[in-house]
Length: 282
Image 1 (tube, rainbow, N blue to C red):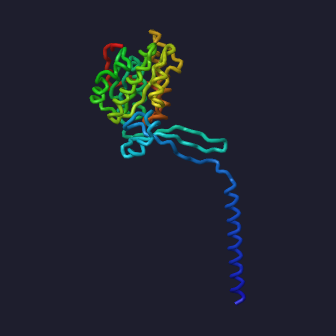
Image 2: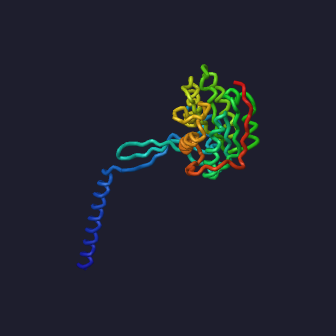
Image 3: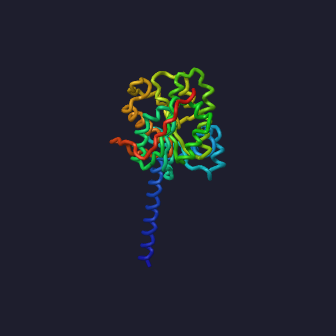
């Protein structure tokens, strides 16, 4: 009888010590700051419906149209002992297979790099459309974009445009042309990225307007220092490799395209049409 009582006391004492130890451990754990944590916030869509800029002002659209969103964009917050690190991210869309490159004469210089990045990362550059002398006004004033979207049916569009507007003194009217071009993509639910003009001189404001309209879907090429072709206006073909290599980093961060594999050896584009359109009216 005494033996059973002794065992019960011993068992009770052990449980009490275990509970007390657990309590001290838990309290000490709460006092220790966690070194790392993740939180996602500010989710936006840049595919269906309004442009990316519109979502900043009309966030409610996303909440009401979640079922229509093809991919999402947002901010990743990383909590470290040293502070909070913010990192933009965009979910990748594995359904994207075909890429279309359009724009002004810059397309001729970018084509090789875009083709090689596409091949290296399992995309197909279905065509490159270079409209020499073209401007945002020219592209927005007819059905050229719609025609080529219907012809090549791309899953993603890269637009390189603006070089012929670097010296345009009145840039505010160009804003509506940019909006019209973007609408051509979003109406067909096609994600896009806009490569700004690799200007040889300081522009009169076209790059600022583009950046205001396109936000993170605009690459500020005017900030790069690039060797020039003999005409002194376009980047050289070698410099264009450096140019798009920088662009690809931004596209990886802000678009559903995945350009994680860099190009080491450049190959000549094959089975990828180059369409050269005659000079456009300013």
